[in-house]
Image 1 (tube, one colour):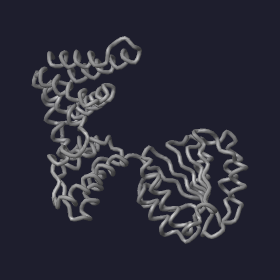
Image 2 (tube, one colour):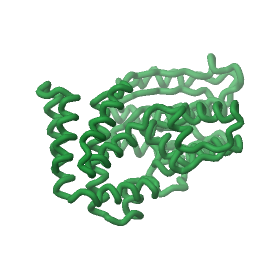
Image 3 (cartoon, helix red, strand yellow):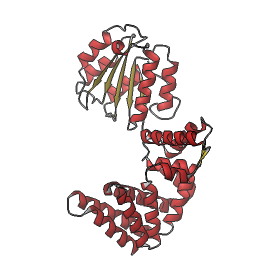
Image 4 (cartoon, helix red, strand yellow):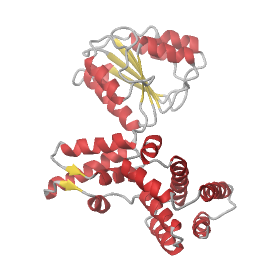
Length: 341
């Protein structure tokens, strides 16, 4: 059966899937979960196990095939689905990191014939949505969820919610800084939030500000790139190079620094084009105070300069990948060039 979604998205998000599983009366037999956020995929799998497996029955009623990007064995899956559960509400068969089989007809037939006493779950970082017959079969016979990185605003709210359970408050800027330091990864965000929670609990600290985040969390490469660009806007090569040197001294990979720099230049180009802070926040999915900073920083550059800097950074990135430039030296020369514009 097909399941209704409460969102405008074509697929369920993490909350939608969690609610559906928790409220299922046994009808759900087929689930496809895909997306870049493996943290949420693992969370959903734990919810599925807790819902359908009896305590101590995992060894008998749960089987997992890790395909490592390969096509699954349809007949082997079918054989496992047809085995009755021993102690649980359902026997769960999981196929992880799979690719859609070339024999789509046989695969669709499998998806359409899962026994009522079993549940078939597929997980993968991505799926080929162009395989319309397969995606339709998943949607018709079960449920499809796409779990990607959260927008910054939702991640900030998640951090605030976790800390609030222990009566701890956090500044919006501090929470946003945690998200930036973790490159949006909920696994890292969760780890850093738990670290802060343990510290606050152990020291009776009731409020988290940016200084505490600076003290406890990894360096904020995104914030450092922002500061580099600030210095470039003021033609201050010495400060910009100093920030770059500090990042390298802290073992931040130069490739990652360059990637973040290119992404920031993209954001500045967008901010320059939009101008309005609310539109910047909406388009780039950033917090209002970040949009304000982007608008302010973009105002120090003309559009031609921003486009030239992005193209030059991109060109150097290509040269480095072909072994024609030294990564650190090219970053330093890029900063000097930018300060001269």
